[in-house]
Length: 310
Image (cartoon, rainbow, N blue to C red; front, side):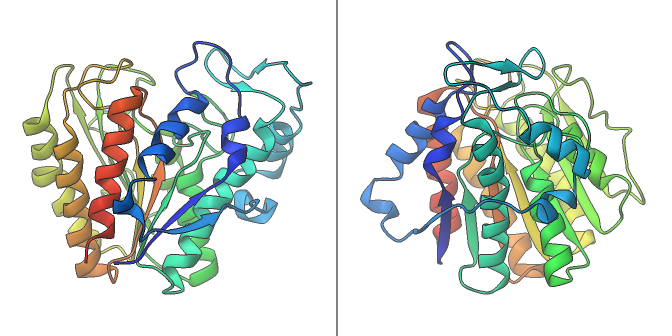
């Protein structure tokens, strides 16, 4: 199976400051792991700049202008909130992170590849249409889904979020639009405090399965197998967009789930099965969280190995 890897050096120039968990070394660890000969078959591409039109399908123009208007001097950091930081390289990284997600959709829906992975920073799933936060400035996964609809006329796009934190930004986009499906497993209670199982969206197009601290692979798999995957199958998505956060890993320092790399592989294979049934095998995966460098590199490598399988 042909798989695209979209990334860009600008993602390393998004400086969040010393000791910040969402740091450039995250991407360095991933890219180093992907130099293994096992990934020689990846189609590698440089992420373009997203256009204002592409981002504007999710975020109002004034929001985008405000974010891109933050232009710190070299060496200066501007805190958008307590956790979300911009440096002199951040605006380009924001544009290219959204651009990578759009590039992945284009490649998959044009039939150039069947699956694609956007190795990006900053992440996106906490960014609502009008509020940044949780390290996120533009919602890359939502931009990808909206691009698939606007450019290719898809009627049903699913965004599937296995980050340990609930993607309230993505849910804010999906829950008012029955052409989108959003599902998430996440630790609860934990930042951002959203993602109750009672949040259903329109006609059940939102499925949240909160997991308690200490939950491991068995509970993680059961949440997807028993609750989310049947609903996803019923939605019959024409494209799967993954908010691929790996901070539910047992070794991750920011949360308390105990998911293993093999569990992420199992879930990726389950997504492939659904994609084969309904979407011609088409999957776009966009990096979100994951803060232990070794666990992140191992989990992303394993995720991509499954996406690349024939």
